[in-house]
Image (cartoon, rainbow, N blue to C red; front, side, top):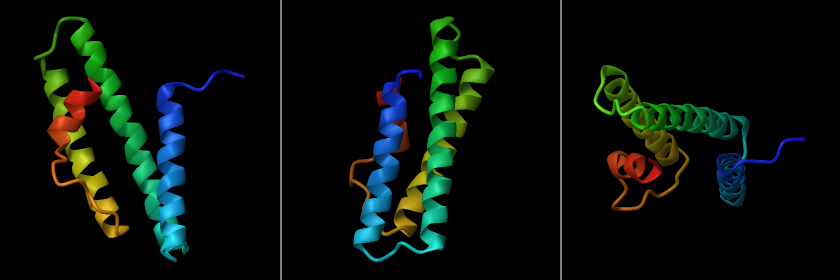
Amino acid sequence: MARKTKTDKKREDVEKSLRDALGRRGRDDMFYMDKVDEYMQLFDVRNWCIAGLNDVRSRGEAWKRESLDLIAETRRIGTRMDAILTLLGMKLPEDKTVTADVEDDL
């Protein structure tokens, strides 16, 4: 069996944390669990975009069209993820921005 990557571990931790928090709040019906699943799908796509950005940057092509498209998509995904967290009743940090988050992951 393959070892879990740092991203795999983070994914498991995030999903468990969301489900536990909803359970503590009594929001463990199917609607909320489906939203957690949707959030995790976006989490995976966002990580795929970030990996693509890293690949483009490693080739020295940081400002090519592919890179700009990935940056825009990562921002859209981050906005949707924030909306899901808000719907689930989770508080977002005051200083959280999608741009800063993406740059930290790169």
